[in-house]
Image 1 (cartoon, rainbow, N blue to C red):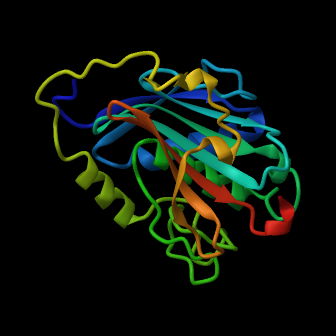
Image 2: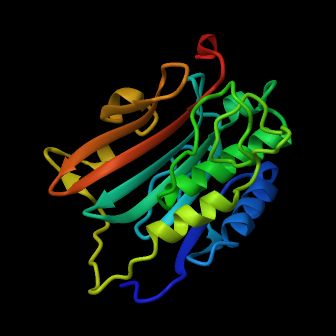
Length: 232
């Protein structure tokens, strides 16, 4: 039950020392908001599989392979409530140019965590001017202006999302089940398992998927692809 703001969220640290500073920065950035309070806690999952944990955000990095995606965020929704979430940073690409750079790491970490508590992109065009927010797609996160951190509009959107308070407690379950598959059977790393295509970015690649689990439950997957389609 959430009877007042800010909403307190545990962020599981399943990242390597290379990523710790970027995770710390993202948590500090989003804690500027008056409606969210993120607290870093020890991770509860294997980074390679990065499974969700009820009531938490789990953040992971690993070499997830040449699958084309730089970072993904997945959220489990029951009715109008987010029940659990994960963010994954794909070191297969962060180990090579141009992504092995601080600005790219910070943008993706900032953006994927924001998806975990319900924030969407401001823009999905890679080639226009930066908006000065990590919720903006870009070919040059360093800018100017820098796209490594949130901006005022992001905080305003969060206030809109979390302006309502719960009138009654919401019971969460460890597993979200539907049909003949539960969430432990889903291959979170394969786009064919992410459900229907909802939205495409300016390069024509699907940036948002939705998998219906039945009974008002679903998984939303936000995808940030590498810049070159040939990199897949």
